[in-house]
Image (cartoon, rainbow, N blue to C red; front, side, top):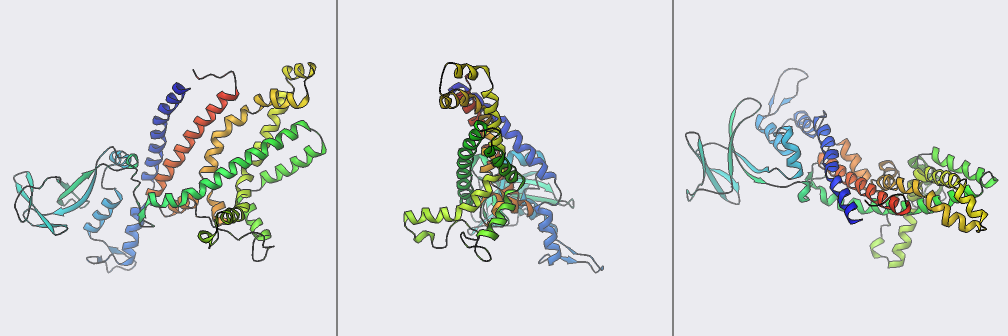
Length: 413
């Protein structure tokens, strides 16, 4: 098994890079990115000091080229596309602490330090403005801006990216993306794990009962409920439950939304558990409804198919009790389709659902990622891509391991 897991993990590496590369390139090439939005806002807002306003009716402010260059550097669009992906990964150095300088003119680099770039022919030397000694750790380059003007820039190089757990900074929230993920991800994980456990526990049992009582009134009645649930989106069911069972115009059995009560931190341990259950009931039902019908019908049809096989008839002919035949002989082969589907179910639940989180006002990862998509917050979008890719790959690995465990025809070779 160890060799099999190692092979799958090695296969997951190129899969991970392939998925993230495709998303990265598509997002980078898509029009209307954060740079365009920011430049448009600055132009419509006046552009700040140094802006030139045209007198032509209907025109907008023309921003100084230095402002445009600074914005491109901030969002990383000053680098060619082929460099952006390895920079984002952290395997290619990114330029930090960048300053535009003029030869022979002291430049303040912060903390009361000044440096001077001296030009000797085509060679540039960086020295301390006070001691005149050569300064190490800095690089210098010539470049042309969008207007074709020659510029000299000094900078430092740093390896930082997702492989170093540096996910960047959100331009919308103005804080590191990792902090945002840490505050939102536990919420979505709790809902996802609880919904996953409840869905499989309840749907597997219901599917077994429907297969055993196939054609009975119970089977027809439960099928009607299952298909009604299948036809209702989780977010729509959540909205209906809030109106009917939530506070305000409803019965008031459950809260109108949120993840926990306002006084949660002051509660005792048992009271905290009760508070979570109180807030989790309606959202969990909305989460589970999406996979409720498919899992139940899959379990029922799989068990019905196995109950018609010759080895089951042989077991009954030998005098084995019905419970033993179903739970020992038929169930092992019947849960194979569920095991194969387990990985995708994990991805669906843990990736969260924006619409459900929006309805219940839950500050989860799904809501965060959707808002990042609307605001073109690339740092959050790419981080969400990394998380969903990793969860999907791990889900596929877990699914294969469960499948090999329950199916004797599959071996770890």
